Image 1 (cartoon, one colour):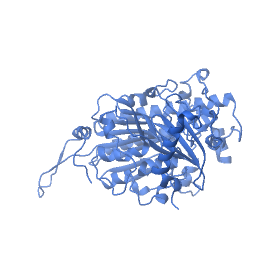
Image 2 (tube, helix red, strand yellow):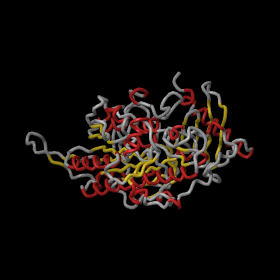
Image 3 (cartoon, rainbow, N blue to C red):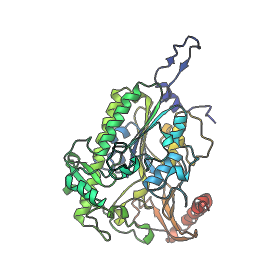
Image 4 (spheres, rainbow, N blue to C red):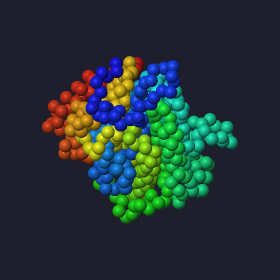
Length: 494
């Protein structure tokens, strides 16, 4: 049912919309219509909240920090499943992962939840122009009906191999620019885990994406429909490729490995990632540790790619302002999941640790003056109902698992949810403001390991206290919650 009363925030937003349009048709009654606000979705891949706006100093990201300063920044936002395909499916459908749904990167919404109305599709059905630029769904050809236009660099260009767009994209997305890396990639389908090339910003895929987004803004400005425009950046996903100027922003001697490059005390063996994704790159051993020199290079590359995308986001923000679209556009910046940079001996993502599950999330509404930070506990399934309320759309008939964040946008001091549910592989997690509790559950639905981290005293999750007698009541309470409220997620579709 359509909401009868809009929040004060949404009213203020609509007041900033474009001026009413008067019809020229003399045969109809002269009427006034108000164009709904636009949405610009800045979708990052593998971005952890290691930014200045989140209290860190390592990564240089002035444009994202500037956006944070005029947004509500969520400091306790979590991805419901820490791998790209599954996370994106969960956020865009508003549905939680289960034992049999939204499992890994290969997730397809059109196969696993074909009848669910995603929020891009809801906007399209509500009169929005919807454009998917870059990586939004993991698969280029997933739920194409959600969009008026789907675009990724290279994918739809003619190729001499007779490849379909999806296959052509898969053959090019690592996007090396140095000749030796290009040849290695062609010959072996692999390459180095990072690259520094002395090229312009628009040479790599994310630069090409940015040029397309800016072209779209210029085109959409003259239209009479509101739009959902996306910028789905690849970086900082492996390989960490960026123009040399962004590598040069950092002094290699000042880059440090994490202090907790060790397995947490009493941690289950199952909880520690073997980082198979990164081992597929040239120069990374198939098993065992990597050298300190390689680790520093990888961290350096990660930082460089974030700074590169930050500069590209700055270009988009400038265009939005210059085109006078900033006053009518909601901006959402989000990452699909976090990333491990050797914390607890781990690289990449898809673990139940906070370095994998916690994400940056910022929402800017034009009616906002100065931004604010909130410690409210939220998860990515909350984005869907938030968009619905901000745009005053009819809620879809199906059930959404999340809750609208509009009350928190109005009052950032709110606590948010009492808990959120996360799933990564066989790990099922209840995350609260105080604790992260995970049970590892096998195919017979039996728990074979568990862990509890007390974020009040151990925010970096270095000591598993699940067997500590002082936490016995907490373990019982969180376990009971997991096996009651989320029993269907644990069992899945039989």
